[in-house]
Length: 120
Image (cartoon, one colour):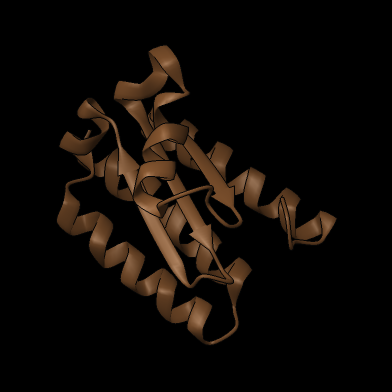
């Protein structure tokens, strides 16, 4: 994962796996600048998950461009409504703004996994 140390990338991967185990959803993270418009790029990443798309959550973080997108599949959206994603994104952005990229990622992934698990 671009911009993270090996230990930080391992922590983020572990958080993604934990969110998946807890919620039963598929979580993906893209860290870096999007190719083209950020929402469109995040939606293309999400669509690339193929059969997993309905139960998938993709988080795109462009630190340089100060952008964050969360895309949810049809079934995932029932458990992670837009409002919940928006609140999580705001908390992540606050951590990012304070210079805590890894903390924001870990918090956001854990929160999304927890929210999906409690609504499942």
